[in-house]
Image 1 (cartoon, rainbow, N blue to C red):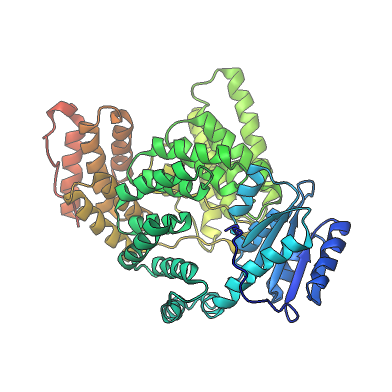
Image 2 (tube, one colour; image 1 turned 60 degrees about the vertical axis):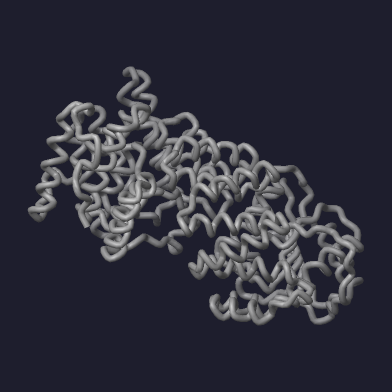
Length: 544
């Protein structure tokens, strides 16, 4: 959060024992700031340029203050270093991070804010300005140090207890301490307590950070309409609060409105276009709403922006290749040849730049297999599919090929298929099958359905399938809900029927218990009938 100047002077800060890391690619700027720091009484200053040793230095050392210079002309910029430090968890709450930028354009500032530095300062600046900014941050760090140290140790419950012990209206950082307390309650899943606390903070102060936390509490309580309304108000009052757009898109998707989620992300990326995860998220939602040109643009920007980013991965190459594949059937012969060459180039690039990513290799063969099927070449289709299966068997964490092919279809899925590009293969974390969580999500979906919350029910059943693709009860529940919503929603009927067919086809040959078989046959029968002949209410009991 960028510091705001006020008239409070507070106690004097003793910098004599502070350790400072000064990072800037400009030797002249490093020298200038170095002597400013010495004038402020800081003797322990390590000044370095931006290079590949900076991240290990941050990880291995214990600095009190990190001053990070951003110069847009650098091949690897200061903001990219800040982004990677945040991504890898190297930004400690007890340390002060100040981003110093010579480019104060809106897109650069918003990109920096995505990584949550303690302050942003425009270069050049005076020693008085630097001292003022550092004093403001360090007073807060000193006042909250016990809380920050507990958070750094991942002892969040202990941190909450410390917060509550410190709560006193005479505390110099009372307001900030209350927000930290609210954030910890959210992290611990105490949504109702968080809502009560943050509700009082926000409506008294109209603090936008407290407002975002309050929206998270609403989401945790499944009060999506309250979250949507407050996020709209926050955006109206703070048009550059990009985190509000991100959360609003999630809320729209949970409410079943993918088109509105797409438009919200489109607005966010227009205002703040430099974040790879946001571009990938726009691409994902754009594909599911059949806005293919928008998706292609988002994936191409992700490739370009990711060249020196910690979010660099094979994912946008594969997504773009699959998008081009989806256009093959409707193209003439000459265009098909051009598309085929482009797909080949994208997949080769992905393999060349990410040779250790075996999962990407499996996905590439699946794309080639699907392309062969689209072109009517069954022999090539089976060959590529066989290659995908062979490599997948060798993986320590094999991917779910059926699930992957469902994602490749481009249909609107009921699951939040979050794009999570990985910087390095050794950091990859693949979600394990979790039948217990799948059953819990399925039961939650039934609860939402019985309460009339069909959008949340679809989301929960989708999550159940995501946790365990073999949860056939959840698959059938999804097929039923999509059939019911196709019957009742004329505008989205075609897309919903496609989802019904897809889920019924997935388990067409599956051996299942009698109760599941009976439901499958019933839904298959209903699917052959005109929609106006279906029963007007529930099409069957949901399976627990």
